[in-house]
Image (cartoon, rainbow, N blue to C red):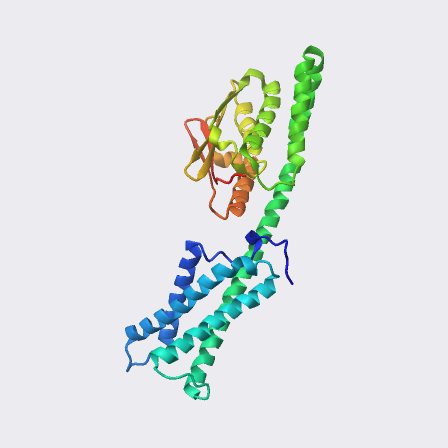
Length: 350
């Protein structure tokens, strides 16, 4: 039943030590307090007093349960999901039982007597309710984790498809350029072959989920070096790279598809060519990557999407959303004849 290979990040139970998780629990607890207050309110009683009692009671049980699950989460993560779920539910029920005993002894000022029908009904009812709600929440967390795994699997499949796909005309153009260089400049032809082989090797490597930005940038520059042989002086490259950003981990094939779009939907469409600017900087806890390229006047983002440019953009946006759980940002902007893509990626380092 114990799975020693399961990592904490793959565990279905959320990290209740985080502020967001605690806030979620407090919100759910207060909603439950309102529901129980409305169900048990009588015209003879005080609505606010009843709400206060339910709020304090439910909040205390939920917060102590949350604190307990926070402490034992690393231990629970060692077990299979169904075993960990049962143990988590048992923790919630035990805390509810202890709280009921405290209420009877110190609030009702009665000694514990299970033969007392009022006490027995009070304890059984609360244990049943807490167990039912706890089971529902644990089931929700489990389904949410399964859904996230499905998204990760889909993202991985799309990444593999992206890694396996390098535009056929790019390959043919590169081979034609290399063939023409073999006679007039063998050294450049050899360098182009090495860049092309390294680029294909990187595109077929699916073993790593995250790689250093320096490696991803190097792959992107290899791509631009090959395109520069084809486009000549029409393609200019400007790098503004912050040294602190080089060891930040990023998803593979994040830069190359954007550079490919910059060339095929920007530089190649302009008779005079233009400059592709690649910038990176570390802003607080994020790596900020910006890629800028000129575009034909009147050529909007929407028109580029219709021609296929949006596929790579949407793919990268979805991958960042899944990998970083909504903490990464990706947006495009077009103004003054320039198309700019900006990514904010949370900093992770080896």
